[in-house]
Length: 411
Image 1 (tube, rainbow, N blue to C red):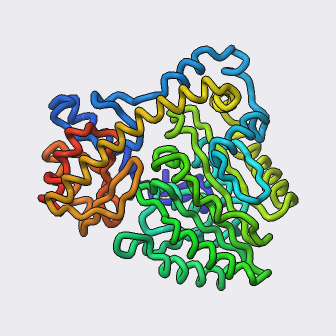
Image 2 (cartoon, helix red, strand yellow; image 1 turned 45 degrees about the vertical axis):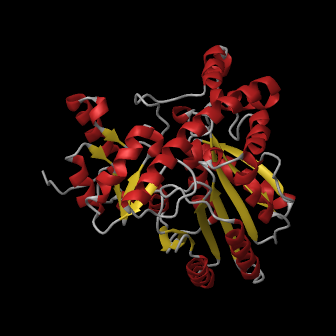
Image 3 (cartoon, rainbow, N blue to C red; image 1 turned 60 degrees about the horizontal axis):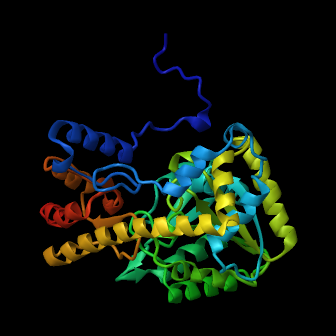
């Protein structure tokens, strides 16, 4: 037998690379088992944990899940999603900040499904997708799975976004391709916790509107808002949506919305892709193609997750309970972020510009070496290209105060 013989189609042959996040996480769990939870700092997981290392859930959401009848737990959902869910998910996303645009939504398995649909339906084979140089790794995975590539721009300049670098990279792509998909993860960007500012949004959208004056070009902006419910107040976190009103027909805005973080339904795989379009025809076209892609990829989503969100937005009492419970978790996360940032400043540890969210990133020259050195001290953080991702979402406030000095020794 030929050991190099393969049955896999050529387009699916790719290097097998272990997942660095889950791999480092497994090492942290092994260390906890060996040395005890209190002696290990496990900052690998992108989920909100309590101070004892247990995953936290919104109590009201979990109670409603347990109370659902079998027909809601086990039955199929419509391919595009439950109709009342599709209304509720738009309300959850915009919270009264929906701009003057035609909107439609299609249910997806988390925000990941929304990214997949944007890449497949709004780019051509071989196209490049523009993202920041600090990015969530599955953007690249999804692009390559569908025969696309990513192009990055330098995200930061000083304490803010490098808008000029964004414009330069976008201009090159718009000149080279008929259609260009841009993915911006904000607010509370993964992995840095940065949120694009009001002034930066004005520059970005002014530039894209100018580029859209060339009617031969088609520009699609995907805003990944997976962490929006942990990015400050409801008002402040959604004010930027106002920039997406009155769009030209060849500039389409999409959002990737997730129920994982804001509603603690990580494993239920609930989410949606939502469009903001210049015309009703474009919005309906969006719904048709994304529904078709649902059928082709996973048929339909998890009915129970959809039912919970729809019920929350129908019942004011239920809604207020969920909001109050989430505020408790936001306070917990904010205290941890504050502790880490205060200690980082004291010891002179440089971090990427940070505003809110689950993660803080420390730039360094050899992230893998730094990560490996820290493992010997039972601190586990994820090495990225260009830096180390620390996750206050999964680490107690006490450990967040200890970590910066430990990291500083090796960067």
